[in-house]
Image (cartoon, rainbow, N blue to C red; front, side, top):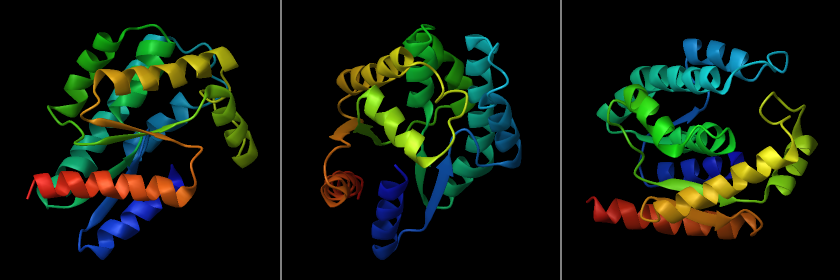
Length: 194
């Protein structure tokens, strides 16, 4: 994700766009404090409801403090995760339901929806293997392999349910090929909005 975000940022900047990059949970002082709670490995007793509401709270702060002001100033926003992550992690993998998670997040988003979501598709085992090579796992990453298989399947389901907005690309493709596919879709959408 990080590589593709940086490549897309560079491409859009070369086209004259001013870019804001965000991450979830986080991106503001308050959202980063919530992130410390959500991802803390010591909080294994956290209920799925608490987890959902904390993610939504962090997202609400990010939308109000960073994303909406950026959009209002004609900047392009690239988010490293957004509402679909909650739909998958809490709604599908935790069993809370897709509709429940979208409903809770309506308050956080105040009608804001991404124009495009890129799904870099990777099976659960490979995703965790890559993460383990990068860093120590946080509370969510440390979940069992079955949980991560539900997450991977959940993302695929969302892409099937909303193919007009969610673009699925195999994360096993070469970096440049992934970038080229993303750029082609972004260009297509930008030309449609011109």
